[in-house]
Structures are given as structure tokens and as C-alpha cells.
Length: 228
Image (tube, rainbow, N blue to C red; front, top):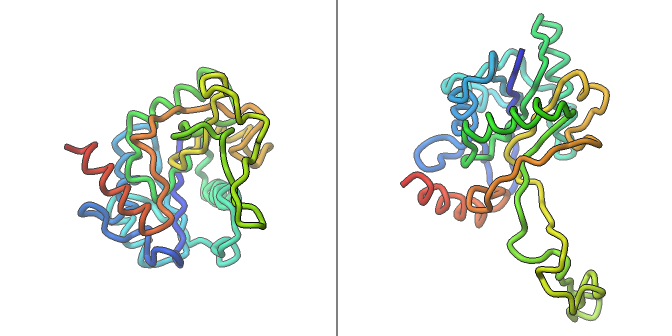
């Protein structure tokens, strides 16, 4: 059985009500739910939340909310893996034994059914524990700067100052859209960042983390261009 789990707790601080705030005409979480359903991959699309309001919105778009998330897993410090592991355990008690799981973030309006299918193919083809979305940095990460204690600029890695950008190793970062896992292996590793994690590469034009109001506005602009 293949299941999707969308973590969506209440209590967002920087963007109040973020998971169900209206984004381009629909609640933000709706895009993740719809992409999962449209992919045709999943027997169940679950939402893990502690918020009755989020649960109601998620259910209206076709997600299942078989139980509310416990308070000890709904604070500012609980990681994604703890929520996914808890959900897998609870659905197993209800007779739903997943072979593969995909964690899809509720704040990923640019996620597509095509990419979800690609990720699953990558995971299965390579028989790995996990695979998740990544993208490139817009500038060479090894040329990164910081402001020191004297309020002056200095390089994080000064040894790369005179290196040509084409001679620097490619650097990727977590795109924050979705994470696939073979459940049997995942229950042993207990993290999507497994030793054999595979990349699901996305272009930067379809990646935008949404943590601040500026992020939200940028994501709306990107979305409007993609959906034209």
C-alpha cells in the first residue's frame, strides 16, 4: 500500500494560519492534497494536524484525517520524522500497513503530480530507503559570505576565493516539497535523510520555501507564471 502524509499543524507564528491561508484562490494545503490525489499513486492521502480548522479544510479537498495529532507532536520543536513515524504507527493500528510513504509538505503549492511520480520511480528503481526533492543554489555556495563580530564581511570558506565558479563542486539544498520512503527501511532509519537518500532534482523556478511574507509573495509570483 502506498500512502501520502501531509503534516499541517496549527499555530504558525510568522504567517498566521499559513497552512489554510488563501493562496491564488485556494487554501495553501489544497495544492498538496490535490497533487497527491491527481497523481493516482496513493490509496490514502492523510493529513496530520492538531487543528480542527485545518482538518475541516483538508477534508473538504479530499484528504483523510483519521485522528488528531497529539499535543506533544504539535510544538515548535517537533521534527517531520517524528510526525510521520507516529502517523504510520497509528494507521497500522487501524489495519493500514504502508509499503511506501510520501511526506508532502502543506506549504508546497508548486508541487506537481508528475514530480511525485518521478520521485516514486527513482526510489523504486534504486531500491533505496528514501528520496527527496533538491535544487541548486542560485550562486556558488562555496563563495558564501558572513558578517563577523566587527561588522565586516568575510568568506565562510576563504580557500575558494580565487577558484573559478565552474571549478567549484555543485551544491544542492533540500527543496522542501516532498520525501519518499520505503516504509520497512524508514522504520529502521527513522529519518528521510538516510545514508542512501536519493535526489529528486527540481529546477529553481519551481521551488520556493514559504516561511515569511516575502517568501509567500515570491511563491505567488512564481505560481502565476507557471500556471499561465
